[in-house]
Image 1 (cartoon, rainbow, N blue to C red):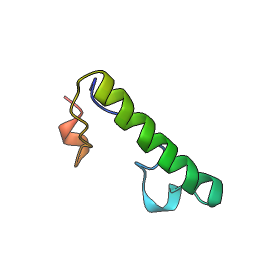
Image 2: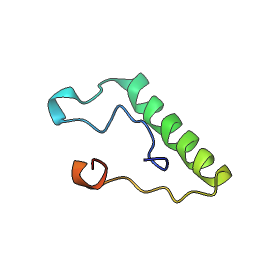
Image 3: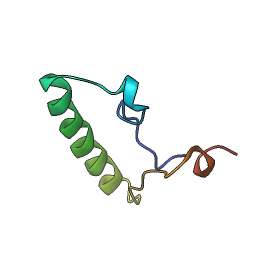
Image 4: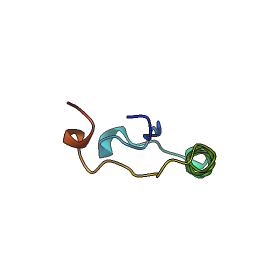
Length: 55
């Protein structure tokens, strides 16, 4: 859980963020996540399913 990043884009298609500001925000979130993981010496890996995250 410590290596996960919060992202509003890990949702179903009907709840997906829309608009130009959200497209830019997605890149900002990604760059911030990469930087945090690099500084914390953590591998950045998105889960493939909830089973990888939940006990």
